Length: 201
Image (tube, rainbow, N blue to C red; front, top):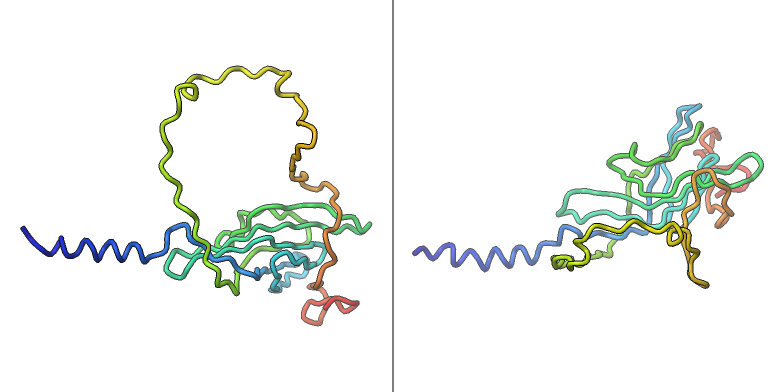
């Protein structure tokens, strides 16, 4: 019997234990976006801190989280972002809430006739978040194997219990209240590096 496989097994186990899990992610404090003015064709890049709101043209962008992968894993950069449109009447309408992917900018749904914005990078992160591995699920109990019963219409229309909170994302284009004043304003039609000459930083 060969001793080589017996000696290699502990080394292999140690190597696998040292490598980060496939679900490990890095939380970043800054998201980097690119914005396009479809009329002029001008594209500018700008950085936004997490939970900061900036304005690009008529769009206000607020990233909530920005993730990357460790260098030893397949690159994946994504950010959960909220985008509101500011109308000429100074009304705010939520036009996008969801994940943006740097590798696939066409997957997100920011739809605006003049401006487009997409994620290009996340930066500044050092905090590694290790997602716990989920244990294998036990087989479902006998009740779960039975076919589901037809719901009673009275059950479907039941109102929530008093004090129970229900979070519902506003549909696209529904008016929303502005969350905060943008810290920076970028207007790609302006000559000075796309910044607002009337008061934006």
